[in-house]
Image 1 (cartoon, helix red, strand yellow):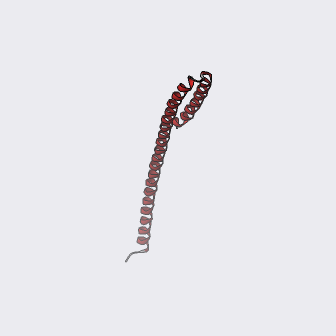
Image 2 (cartoon, one colour):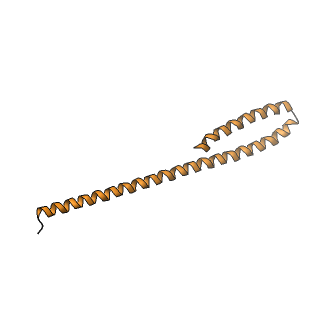
Image 3 (cartoon, rainbow, N blue to C red):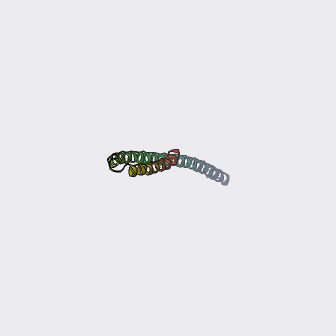
Length: 105
């Protein structure tokens, strides 16, 4: 039969073991959370890069199409085309500026 001291000693040992397991579980959970946050950050960054690349491709296609249209219009009214080209250059510069912060993030 166990004495009171033996029971108390076993109880203390079980508590210490439980605390150790809890500590390891918390540490493992923190490591998992850190990995999840890192993966989430990398996925977000990849999505921003992909979006920026897609936007850049769309801007280039639009730019090429507008050059063809402006080439045809230039034959009809050169002054109007120059004004439209100036506006287009400003719009493209603004779009490029908007892409810059996304690349840094």
